[in-house]
Image (cartoon, rainbow, N blue to C red):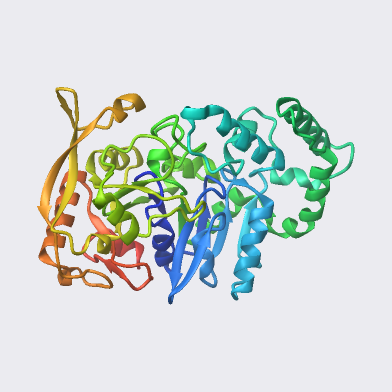
Length: 432
């Protein structure tokens, strides 16, 4: 069974650990959208790995990792990540493939991203300013540069012409900019020999792999609620982080996605701007942040924290066809007298149970909470569901009920081993 693993909230749900945990049961892990604005953190025997572009499955020998056409690639960031892995004994040779159709993030994209965010003022989105959005803008405007274009670096070729036009346009928009197209081309010429062995038609590779019976895991970045079409627009990412993005971002048919696992924290977080109905501004919010170490893996920015939002989660379940949840960071709630679940929103005199599509309306919503007893017995490191405190099991059962989806995987700590796999659920099919 091919599986799509994605975030069910606003990102940072712990997808890296879940992908890493599942990888031994799959032959291929394929990333389908986003750029190096994503940060997937994995702990292996106490050693911390933070991956931004390369799928988390790279930490396992014998697994092929794919960066699909839906990803925007900063080559400097990619090779920095490859070098980091090599320095820690992980060789990606022959195991990492990059789509020839993936678009490149170039220096003028980063420069323009910083400027555009500054110009927004109070309407800023909270972008990482790494050039992701401008690279996608160029892609949609049909002036982007794709990985495969680097095969022709001749001075009079189409790549050189496109970069000269793009640099000239950016220099006109950014008055203090004196970027030179030849410098950009020179940098690409230096990187191409190293990149070339990784480049292929990854859509064709995936087609052949599936035909041979290799199981494929489709890995999303960010979260469903940051999807460019279905998220809290305009405070979203620039790509389709939902399950549908796997088909377009990898060149596979929709029927290739045979199941969807949504990753969600036992509470909720968000980085950057945009509405977060259950956000806590008190000591409890600070406790969740510090206990959960809620700081961005890519930026280090503190995450905004709140109680679990079942309304938002139900929405993610619906638009992605999520078959089960992987519930992470349950142990962060250990020791609380009570825990809360947002089961509806109140907007003026109206109570609503579905997430509004209009961001202004969502920002005006107040959470309607259901309060449950907390648990004093630690859950950290527990690997069997029946060993969880009864109050924790009741909390999980209520989340399943209000989200209308089972919690098939429960993470009780940062390491691989700190996980409960509920074999009486669909998870048994994913873990062999």
